Length: 364
Length: 232
Image (cartoon, rainbow over all chains, first blue to last red):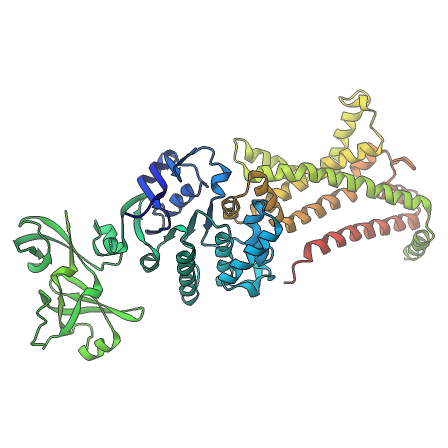
């Protein structure tokens, strides 16, 4: 479905002093895809990346690259030369920008004229031609990371591995670099593994997203699958689902379940699970709409309407995160104009509505 | 006071008149200490790099020994090198005692630990992730070492200066294994001691000035090399 497989890992384990840092039974990377690997700090993302980059030998497991098995004890140099890695820190050499970009090509002993040509091309593509003769240590964070990206792309790698490359940058620079990377990846179709703890970055860049925690991949799939249908609570909370409720299916009719939650409230959810099933409900904050408590005409498409009271309002980027008490806790994203129109403040009454199809049901 | 003034005047006259004995002593000093420094670099840089990049049982003990070696008293080095080279000593058959070679040997024992210790520190102060990045760029083991040393070149030049400074100015070992023989093993430091003890302060001052100029000259060249690319 996703084209031919470039890299596969089987039965991978990394243990240090008897403690398991990484356990991945199976993982594959298809040629040309971007796999975004997300998870909290210490989830094992960087360890996995280093194993795939042949920078760290696993305790056990096999790695196949382009149909060829990789000896886990002596990763051959030839294989490492088909990969490129970009770390969070630019890790540039104390020399000029162009020398930095040329460094990998020089290690491969390429002809000088060819190196010059390719370096010039990639400096241009990353918009840093004007920095060519600058010393790396005089660069800003964004310029340095562009240089680091150019140093990786110039190698024309079969796989590009990126370990939180933009995490340390300020938001506008980060935004610009994410866009640049996205464009260059589409242009070159290079296979990439993009490690990040930022779910928005993953959503934007990943053809597939894998969520890791405590050394294991909890879920892997398209961004829609992972963000819309998380397999468990850990994934749900990591992909930004603010409302996670435990409940029990009370009744079932035509693909809709009535789930009893909190202090007896019933939430309608699109699910064919039978009555009596214990479930976890996930509701994304952007799926919840707030109406004035005096509103008489409730929208018919939303099956769930709950009178609620505002418990907290927190600024959240360009929007606000409104915590509600409907008998069960619920979180909604609301824009500033809506806050004003609805006259929201702590303790204010309001009506919260959301569609039954916006409720993701995880059977326990 | 008068002693210093006439001494200094005489010293400059000695320097400017091109006294052949003074120049011979100066050249020999330079020859011995530069050779010893170069040999120490050949030994110390690989050893320091090895200690920085590898983990093995007993590594800390070796590092402690190197660090102790960095402050070895030259007199003690002189004593042991003399014993080794003594006619009845383990290396007596080489007949090296009281030769410039013996002095180079003793100075290597002094400078090599300094170069090793400072190389180790120079590599260790690099970002540990730089190693991963260099390997990820497709470097072989040798290329990795080469690039790490290139990145550590500034503190490595400090190691060169410290090594050279340690041996050009030492006297204990030189006088013990060299013997301060005129025209053969007499160097600036040993000659200065001898002239001072004879009360020839003018000559002693002249020799000291040359020694200082020599140290300044060598360090100026190294400092220039080190700071050339550092406008900040």
